[in-house]
Image (cartoon, rainbow, N blue to C red; front, top):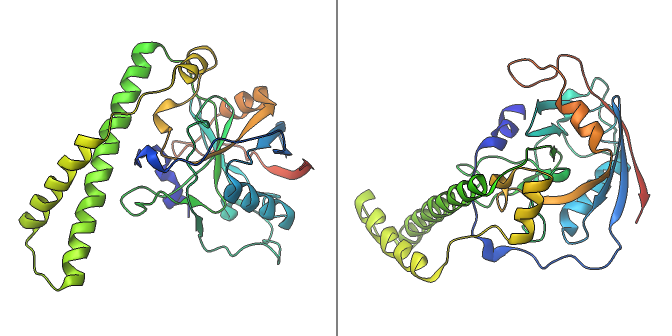
Amino acid sequence: MNKIFKMILVLPIFFFALYCNAPGGNENTIITIKTTLGDLKIMLYDGTPVHRDNFIKLINSGFYEGVSFHRVINSFMIQAGDPATRNVPIPSNADSLNTYSIPSEFNRSYFHKKGSLAAAREGNDVNPEMRSSGTQFYIVQGTKHNDDELNLAEQRINSNIKQAMFNKIVRQVADSARLSGKSLTDAEIQENASLKMFQYLSTNEDYKIPDDQRIVYRNSGGVPRLDGTYTVFGEVIEGLDVVDKIAAVKTYNTDKPLNDIKIIKIKIESK
């Protein structure tokens, strides 16, 4: 499992038309993650109900008790949720140790500002639908960005959007030919895919980071290059200092902390 979710730095992109509707109301669930370095109070977004309900299910099962933050990168994020980091057996009513995933829930209103809670996942080469890990999550620390850096992030996002879309079209062309009994060479598949890609580029504008999110990235920080590629489903509302404290610990060259940082318990405060 570790091998799978060390892929978080890979930047597979999905076209933004599949974003969910914006969140509504003040009914978001509040949880507290008690760790060996302090407490994090987090709001789970109702606008990502699949991720919210999955997380609540795992909390209620006791799944996260004793799990470590196994990957920590200062100025980037802190990651946990791998059951292999537990030193006690998984509760009998928890989910299987086998990796499972859930559908992505991209939402333009949710972005990778400092303190955002998001789902880790496999890379786009094996996960073209960008499904989220069923258990592993990360909390963004990030850094502040100026407009030039945000412009570069936009370029990187758009480059990856186009590459991911072309890869998807190639797979679709190949699958369609196979199902219809046609025999196409690799060159013919690429040619057909290129024509479809041209049509896509002709009807889809480049992505732009919204002005209100640019302000947050400039003033508070985050990791804008991950927007639209990993599902953000909550945010820290108390305890950003604990995020900084965890992010600052010494690690091995594998990004694993020298000393374990454990999740003692996650408590649901309100629904």
